Length: 577
Image (cartoon, rainbow, N blue to C red):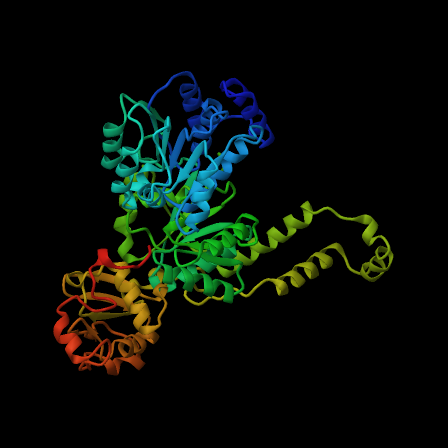
């Protein structure tokens, strides 16, 4: 196996890598770096996230470029501002002993004037997101005519995010004789199209199987009803005292709700989503990197760009709408050769998705069982004992008190001291609420999935431009019920079935009372047996009132699906997933 000294890198680069503590290249680095140093070529490299792709292209770039020239020689495109910032920091670290090297990050969500000024000072390497790069091109603030190398990092994700036209615009501004290095976790048709249109006889390097998952990740699903998912998340966190995890949700609203509930319940948590300013997102990420946050609740905006080697768990509170994104989510753990666990909290509607993901990643999920309260307590106590064994004792600090302490404890046997220590620590441990997940670790799915909630008919469906995530957010906004407490059983063309806990039925019905979608009244009916306090509501239909979202003239002119808040098609929605 190669070492970094044997790859042919420039001496200043080898020195900086050694200071970073890296000795042995990852498989993708071993295969790619010598090839890029030895020959001028286009490259397609397929490897999972967390396998060291940034160094695979960054280290050879730093060895090849002419830093005595002021010209921009390399352009790196990536999908998110988080990844853009991370790549820039990594390249600057690689160039620690090349003081004249200038790397400039160009991304949205930050002041464009400051970035323009940085470009005017000169940049050997520009790292950018597609949207901000096209903005710079349209303003004529960046010239790409001298670019010799273009790197497309996470190419599949850029295309998933809808940057196809932006990529075409940017690449058309670069010279035809440039070298293009394409790095991707998967190889969908659109990535293949880019390789054919913008590359000439590229060298292909694959680490692992195409479109497969990281072998160091264990994939586990926990069957649980939607309204018990939060309780399941807490049970998993309680059972893993050293957990350092990213919890993925579908929408910004749900992300903030879950993070707020975790903080309220005493967990070290925070949210990362598109409604935060760049300064807020940087602050959250800094706290997470410094382990001040143990549970980072995020939308898929954070699925890329979080390059932290010791994330223990990725928890899918909801599976992603684009199932290929599961690979990118799970790739946030098991980085740099470490092992990790990817957890999916799966409702009844998700089992088909689990089977599809298994085909994508070419690995089987194992079914997880929530630990009992006693198992959680045992695990937490053992963690305390282990911490006690590993701690360093400052004898000088405690020496003055030792004689008196020994005198007070000398009447106790070894067994009594241990028992009292355990009893004291048990009192200090946080309360484990059995709500949703009971003392034995069972939830409504395990007990009787047919009667775990009340089934409701809602007169909204796909004809209204609503998919599962849209309907869940709509119901949450109108009723005040957290999305975690709502199960979307089925979404048909003109209606849907949802399921909520018996004690939440009245809230749903009140929330929809008198509401319209466009000019059409929304109907809600109970379609399953519920509890005693909701049985009187069975089959009741509310006559809608036209005051909810606009005047009568508004409703008359709007037509189906034109509701000012919810009546747009799913593609026009501003929801962030």
